[in-house]
Image 1: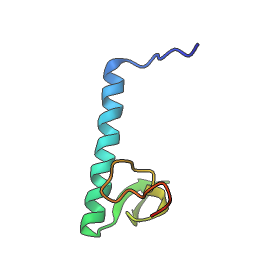
Image 2: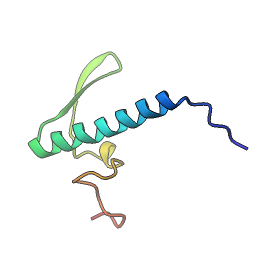
Image 3: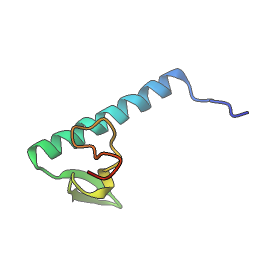
Length: 68
């Protein structure tokens, strides 16, 4: 049996962060602007259409299961 030791507040916080991620990616795609973040001690700009962001579900730009 797997126990869920995560508090309700932690679950809500994680859900809010996932939703915010979707909004940021959608907005960057809509305006064709890079996603800027801190990675490995450096500021990097990422293409919002890159495969790294294809896992975003419920996005206006989400790909169909067959890759379309």
